Image (cartoon, rainbow, N blue to C red; front, side):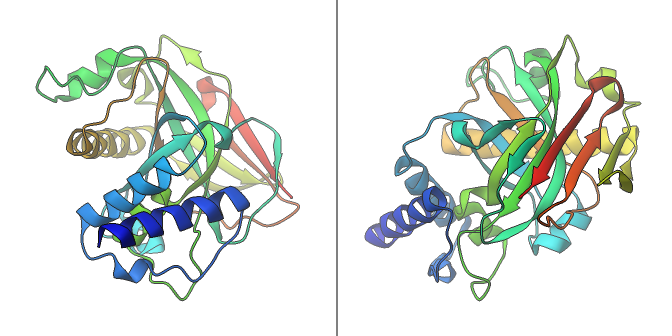
Length: 256
């Protein structure tokens, strides 16, 4: 079984690096722990640095789309982080795009010497970053999509376009935030502040448990990124996806 975990991880890393998909036997994953071990193995096989952690499937609507029964977490790799207005070539296996909120950490999180509490991450945040995230798979469509296969497959993370950070912003400052998503200038979705922040806080709490379970931390200067919004939008060549976060600014990604 250990050999299978290592082989799956190496195969996922190979296809992520190459921007390709394959008939990977992710259906052999039989538990959440095994899924996380495959993710660890895939990460170890990547020649890349981790710059934070990402959560998707954070609300019921996106869980239904992604066929997951709970939120899904994965690492953010340095080479997958792009500046706003980047031209992004869509690889095979892309599932879609969603707006996401980046939280820039000033302290390590979670602190293993303190009980986990919502106030702990509030204290650690030094700024917020508007983002757009591309979700996708390294496995072909015949492989079941569920929370275990998604977790193993880098938490479905492909790439993230980031806007400019806004410092000295905390979650309490964002309760009135509204996010407007547009494709080629036409509005396609809108998310409202109180609901957005409730979902973000819930996802952060779940991410804390995931990190603690794996003995991981987000160090100062790294990001916690929470996928949001009620929609995962189809990504089509030639489209420009813009997310307007109001006072936090806008971010755009152009698909090629």
